[in-house]
Length: 182
View 1 (cartoon, rainbow, N blue to C red):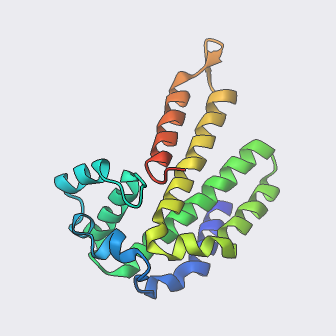
View 2 (view 1 turned 135 degrees about the horizontal axis):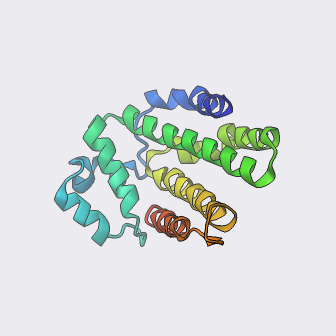
């Protein structure tokens, strides 16, 4: 129930962005004036995403995310905003799950995740389409921490940590770096 409430709070606070247009700061370069991105998910576009940098940043998963949005919504900015808000809602839920696991306190974890979910500092990352790299890398960061926690303190095979969770940790970490190299 708390996860649904957190996601609902994110959509309640950020639903107005569904009516927003692209921002002419760099949404043009990331989405609607980028021929590779605006065509949607293609074989050539996928290869381009993994072989090109923009502003000295290599973030192929961010490019693929924008391509997927163009595939689904075309160049209608509302759909792109829906994806960013949905990713932020996922991040709020993942943060809650992580903090509940680490602290053992459901209500403190819910309070902190709720602050994260609706805090004004999150507006730029959620409402600015070209900042997708922030919410996407945040998602993989939280998945990395959850997987590592499971590896380090969770399931054990024959008395040793389950190495599958370590592999998942490394994969999530690599995906985070392919979303925003920081």
